[in-house]
Image (cartoon, rainbow, N blue to C red):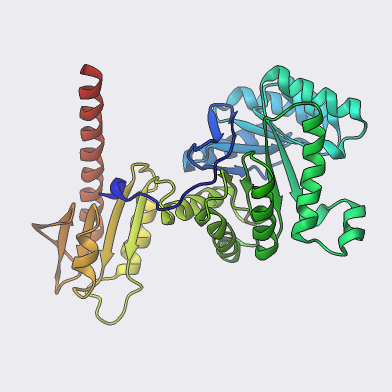
Length: 376
């Protein structure tokens, strides 16, 4: 049932590129990425974090490469992971050349910040040779000095002008395989800048509210800013920037995309905020099941409602549903009420079992459908 819900959003038409095996733009699913916060030269720790991000559902991971020593570490890291890696580089074009040689799937480097034209040309030549894109990343906190003087403060127009300067370097070298971000910690500043840039260039846009804050406040700011843009069809890849475990960035990103019906991964819990009508502990049930079922990647809508006021209506729209009742609660599969009733005091274990069984049925039916298509 969850797969039938299509997003009403009409996405902006953008050109396409590949970051490793992941398509960006040109109608491809909006990719989710994060960035490691380990010291890159600590190879084992960085690899472990990348693997954790991949397990959480990340499509792409960015790794900071500030030195040549870090570039050598990047080479080792790349050989130990399978997910596409973006090498984050500032100022030193020689690092970009080295990580391109070592298998980076994308270079995050601003052409205007690496010096003379021959250095830009060398980086572009390396990107072209290795068939990897470049990401231009403009940040309100690091605008060029002359733009700060011109505008007096970071403005949407200042961010876009900075981006267009960097883009001009690539245009003059006829290199179009790039994506752009214009990030700010202020939601309205970032949103306005992205809207302006979306009208100026056809390339894919990387969305983010930079330095958004801690887990709760950062998730809210990111959801507001990115939600506005995504609902307008703007954005091809996203990063939620949180002062928290990077794995949380992936979880928040997928929750946002699920809410907009732009991507589905894992379980979408529909749960009431609880009141005195609840017949069982809804909060504990949902929180426990979220933790236990994190391994599930199959899209599934699960409705957990504590009473019969809204419970039946929500359950009828879900893949699995529970409606609170006295001592025992009503149970639904694919919107149909089942004879089975769940004991309110032993619900969590039984509900987990039923959800996993439903996932298994969905996977089995998908396999049968694929086999039938292949046999035709």
